[in-house]
Image 1 (cartoon, rainbow over the protein chains, first blue to last red):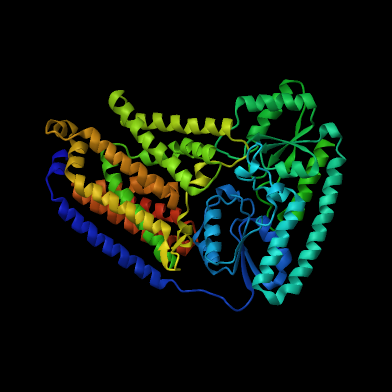
Image 2: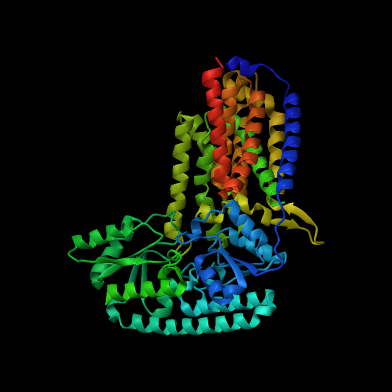
Length: 326
Length: 280
């Protein structure tokens, strides 16, 4: 076999074949492209595509029946691990308005959305009008402007209200006729959120001060901690590549035992294995800590369930936290 | 138009990877693509630590330099250390990947930093990233331009270096005896491989690149015993999977990269059946 391979055969000939294959390639793609029909619905309801379930929920409340709404990431999909499908491509192509979170939550998709916006497509980051000073930087440093911001802003309801505002403005811009509906819906929703914001503050404040510590498996609750005065400890950073180390576990175990915490919390989109190790570790030090329930962090619950809406998700999380720590 | 761009992108990646993959398979270094996909992690982390940003350009620069370093180290360990090629690949990529993990856990705090979210692109999104000039002229997706240039470089390398590459692949001793530098051609090939893989990761994601580096050459290997035929068959197999994979994804509304890879698997089954039952 070796010798057959060594038989000299002119590379020119191979290249000629290559050229003809390239031509074939172009022809084939042209063929495929002919079959694609241009779908563009200019009449009828506004076509809105949201990336995450949380943003879809805003658009659903604000837009109501006036918009046709779709989301790229279904319930339970971790935005960091999202893979686009052929159907998503169609949704994005024919969308009149695209809403995304930004701050690198959608990874490289964010860069694409930014480019689309530059080209004049109606693409909006719901975080774009939030003042940078209210965002948390990815590193604990002095000059936090130089670093990317933490994207998990939906756990601070007052920040999420700004996102609602951005969605309202975006929808009005592209559907002037619906101005009144959008203003009314957004106004009511913001009021509801403001009430929820106060309630969450009060609920968390009802936990005895020493117990006000939220231990979760990964680092998604920093805004929550910041807004509602509860200390947040994650076993793992946001990146899931770097696994937690033995030192992380033992540090967390001594922290929990020292503060005599009653509960730690798992997240719906992260395996609970790591936190079980912490619970076992605490047992070995004669401190009983239990798993206080599952919190929704990067994705909401199934559609149709109470946890499938933003407000339901926040209520679920807060109830679990209060019940577990009080 | 988006179908055209996606198929063209897939075909360009398939062509570049398929051509290089033939030499990799024959040199028993097929999994180098997978290795590079892991080994680039420290490059990404270092790029972030220095620039404090998650933009594509520093990420690609970081990833490409570590990709080159990885192929260099693999060859060094393999040649000088008398370690088998596959073992050398395994050794170096796990080492580099773990360096990246250590850097993440000790130098960064609250950031989602891994190749999946800052480097790997998504083939479905290629049609949205257009190159539009100052005057407003639409020149098509940027990825297609990048990958076309890459494809020309790969074809140029193989065109110019066909003889020495073939000689050093099949009979390095003989090549050395007649004065062909095995080291030079090896590093040149590996440099092209790591550049191709990193740039393709950036446009279409990792799994598709790994599949295109291995599957088309493996199919071609079953169907022929001549290197020039192998290169052509591997190109053709890649093309069929790009077109067929897109059609499959469109029919099922599924992930495009996954569908293209699945078509490669089906092609391989056909090639395998041909090899086992019909060829003898």
